Structures are given as C-alpha cells and as structure tokens.
Length: 144
Image (cartoon, rainbow, N blue to C red; front, side, top):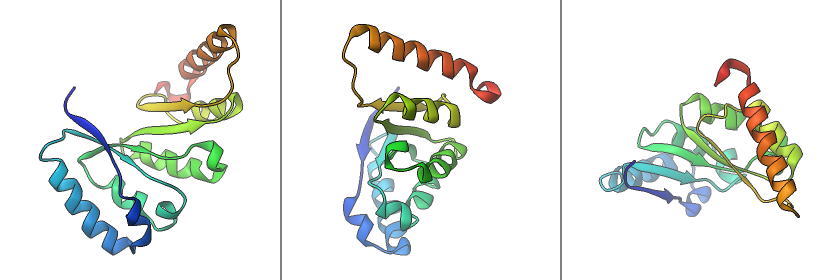
C-alpha cells in the first residue's frame, strides 16, 4: 500500500555481526525515510551463519525477508519460522512440489510468498499445483 523496494547488502556477509548491525541499521534508517516497506534480500548461507538474519528481524522498518526455502536444506525451516514469529512476511523458494508441500505445512500461509521455479509442463499441472496450495493453506494448523 506504499512505497516499497527490495534491499540487500551482499558485502554484509563479510562483516562481523556487530559491524553488520551498525551499518545495516544505519542503511535501513536512511532508506526508510523514503520507503514505507522494505523487503530485505538475504543471501544464504553466510548471512545466516553470521547471525545477520537475527539482526534484520529486529529492525521494524523491514517488513519482509527474502531467503532460501527448503531447496537450500531443511535446516532453514527453523529460521523461516523465526522470521514469521517476528511478524515479518517471508519470500522463499521451492524447486519441486514436495518442497511446496513442506513449506506450506510448516509455515503460516499469511504473509508467505513461495517462488516456485520447478517444472510445470502443462496448464493442467499448473492448475493442480494451485489447487494443492489452496487446499494445504486452508488446512494449515492454527487457522493462520
């Protein structure tokens, strides 16, 4: 509903958590003078190992975090859940239908965007995937 952009700091993966916090926070404060909604693109795995995702989740101006999904390894699911637990929207990826199922079953569908880059050969396959996503989203535990 307002000005938005995807922001990132790939160089940040080379910084310590304290330096990243200092520079990322400053950068976000500056850009939030213009943008109302910031989606932060996080390249994994280095920024996750460096605890940068923890720092980003605490910055109120960041409304969403874009990071790998199941295709990067099931070990990311706890982090994806923590992002959602901080009331941040989540932009993630899936390479096949099984990954889509896991993401929808494990994550709250509200504020979740899954970029599916797997194979879809026919309109029927695409419609089938859409119906699966609708079904799984409606069945999500907790009614989220």
